Amino acid sequence: MIATNGAPPPLESLRHCFQGVVPALIATCSRDGEPNVTYLSQVHYVDARHVALSCQFFNKTRRNVEENPYATVVFNDPVTYEAWHLKLRFLRAETSGPLFDTMALRIQVIASHTGMAGVFRLISSDIYEVLELAPIPGFLLPPDPLLDLAPSAQVAGGPMTEIRGLQVVSERISRAKDLDDLLNSTLLALDELLGFSHSMVLLQDECTKRLVTIASRGYGSGGIGAEVAEGDGSIGTVAASRRMVRITGVSCQLRYGRAVRGRVEEAGGAAGLAPEIPLPGLCDAQAQLSLPLLAGERLVGVLAVESRDPLHFDEWDEAFLQIIANQIALGIDRMQAADDDGGPVATARAAPKAGAAARSRSFVYYKNDDCIFVDGEYLVRNVPGRIFWKLLTRRVKDGQVEFTNRELRLDPTLGLPPLKDNLETRLILLRKRLQEKCADVRLVPVRRGRFALELDGPVELSERESA
Amino acid sequence: MGQAISTELAAFCHSGVSILVGTRDRRLFAECVRAVGARVERGRRELSVFVPLATGAVTAANLADNQRIAVCFTRIEDHRSIQFKGRAVAVALASEDDRAVIERHRGEWTRNLAVIGMPPRLSLRQCSWPSHAIRVRVESVFVQTPGPGAGAPLPPPATAGRRGAS
Image (cartoon, rainbow over all chains, first blue to last red; front, side, top):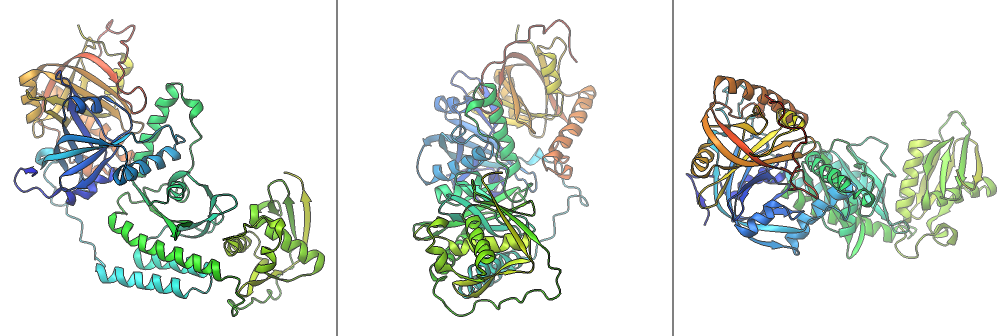
């Protein structure tokens, strides 16, 4: 039973305080009576009577609670800055299990971003019983009647808005005519109906084991094709672990990670560190939620949403987006299985632009990394690069205009895996890169499993061994 | 005699960093509270920390009982942290001179919090006056920056103690 002074709210209602936006502080005392006070990196809500604190180093706090299990934690609400006082008793250190995995994954993401994968990691989730919870009434001055007015209550959408949003997303997924349509219409609905204004879907390339951004919303046009290695950052960590991860107070967490990195370097451990990985997506994201897209046991890709508001995502978003992610994954799986069945016309074939200036394009293919440049600018690489070079050379040498997915699959020089080759995904990526870099060269669907390579002007091809 | 505080460390303590105070009662139950300012005293072997009366009652009671105190200074933008351990040799009501230190700290602390996204509208609501002035005789100093070596003693400065700091 938690002792309470007056009638404080239950622990679970202080969920903002557990987001780590304002670091909590902890005081402990050694057996010989020496107090210690420091900041905490993570306070995790376990249940109404327990919290878990992350232990990354066997530090003084940990040594103290092994000698004398009582501790005091003070944490603040990041919205109101109100302070709360928790009296705790250390129970045990967990080094495996679901709670440990969840806490470890968050640290793994920060470690990866700051180039400390394998160096900075969770040692244990330390479980404490909450003996007392009380507000600290004198911490803040009384509110100013004008300056500290309670913010106007937001017009809540209510569960029906959320269910209707889910209904729309589900409908778009089930009715999508192709993979591109499925992803774009889903991300649009997530933005317009549910407020997820920065989102992206990355699909796994079976050949390179990297994740490639195939659709995005809220980032402008430049992000398509951006790659993330498995294990890198929140997206790569989700792909490697196949578990959802939510990071709040991203900049605070990164500052903590960089402080640890600095200490590792000072201690002579710089050789074991990797360069810091730039955050994909928003450069100033404060909250990230990434979810694996799983079709059965197979990882299809990752759905990632982010926000500049550190408190934007909570448990509700996790549960809600998990449903959406499952639907997207099944939709992608269905599209990938069905993209070669010769079905009806998917998209009306676009007519060449009438009267458009016939601009000449110069394409260069670098053999060493299957990389293609157009007019001196990077276009695409890897398997999509090999595919596009085949299409261009056939078009220029043989005059072939239309191509089938089947003939690409049967070409061993393209290096497509025999099963789940993601060909449709690679063609979408190629189509979008062309739209972005040279819109006068287009891949136009003719019918399911067949497309045309359209050129508005002459093209010039050359091959080089390396750049 | 206690450990001396280097000039560089004194400047760090006066630079609007976060200040946490830890004490304990006679049953060894620890208490923590945020301080609202600090001053390294002349001779650089003692420092004064200021804890609001509104939040510092348990801290003052603990110090009246046993004097044991830990004070942790943390720069929030890079987590550089230093912890002082020692004895509270006096606890009094902060004076008007002390108030100037508290006000200067409040301004710098608010600016530092704003850099990491905490709006001054919130941070300026933190109560800072009236305060206890807790005079601490420093016995040892530790590096508390998170990472390997956190908790290691900070060696005393080679030249400390020749001149007083204010």
